[in-house]
Image (tube, rainbow, N blue to C red):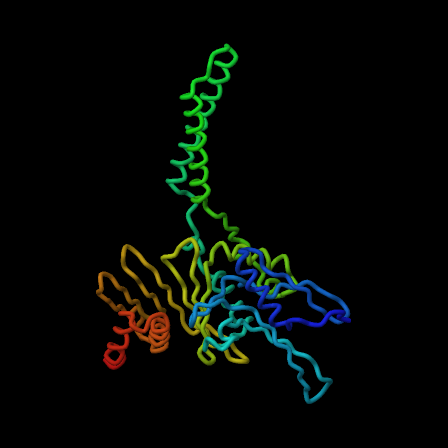
Length: 335
């Protein structure tokens, strides 16, 4: 029995926790859920703090809705539905609609399973880090020499000059600065097997708190944010990476009640000042204001074309690529 009155409902409590989590990276929420007479730990959301709304840029949170269903045969039962929802939409400030959480999770996980994560993971060797490491060793040797020299003069009863003490202080300050720079450049170690050797059946089970927590921790090292948009039964999942801001993946999902499928995808990459949009049937490149189109399959698909155009327009209606695609659409599909 609750002794004190309920101040906020369950949805509001969960939302507050999600917002707090967004301020504490890698500290995903584990909740307690009643299962009959028992209380069990669960981890519902792998995207706390990184899920963002494409429409307004606001945070998205894990939302649980429970509804009572009465089947034709059998007793009434409570069914649980999980969504990922824009905070601003909840408050009537955004038009993006809630998306089925399980669908988003499944396609993000499957995408990461099938890609070469080394293309978005920072390389282990960084020449600047090596230079700084050598400089740190040199400064440490200088500090040791200064300290030994000062001790020798003290032992011999000689005065230690102001210049010697000042040089020691300067060397210590330089060491602090080098160590700080080294820390800022340090490569984040990503445990790739956690992301790519995972048993998805176990991962999708919210009761497997340890597995899901480890997965979320590694996901947060790779992914900066996941931008989500719903248009009817179609979901757009835009994955932006932390360690390679020049590359992103966009997944287009059809979410029906009985079937969810990937209908197209785009790789967006910046290379040597040029921006490329790779789809399954064509590539668009932009450099110095010049747009080039190259068909990569015999059949150019209207689905790939329309989905990329809709995505570009959602980001910026005036984008040159979107303008070019609208102006050339009739020509490309009637020639």
